[in-house]
Amino acid sequence: MINTTIQATFAFEPGQRFRATDPASPLSTSELVIDRLVRDHLGMLHVVLLDLELREISLFAEQFEAAVASGYLAPIAEPIRALA
Image (cartoon, rainbow, N blue to C red):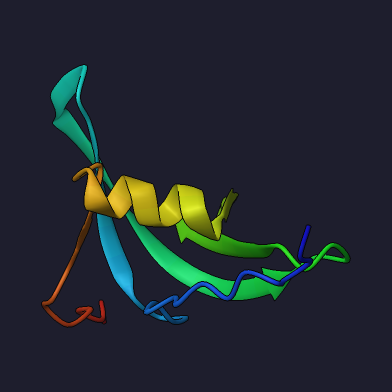
């Protein structure tokens, strides 16, 4: 058996915004921002997201990529509007 490290290509970075939709309730959507990417002591990559109430949500990178690929998380392209 050959021991190799899996190198995943992760194309996301802090500051990117996503819209999360709930398939059970299409009218309920929330916005999430990638706050940081963290490697744990086992080498696993975690994506830490913030919601609009600044709650942290941590996912394994593979879970995050699967959510984007399946459409549960969709990138938001428009700029953030500041409130004055």
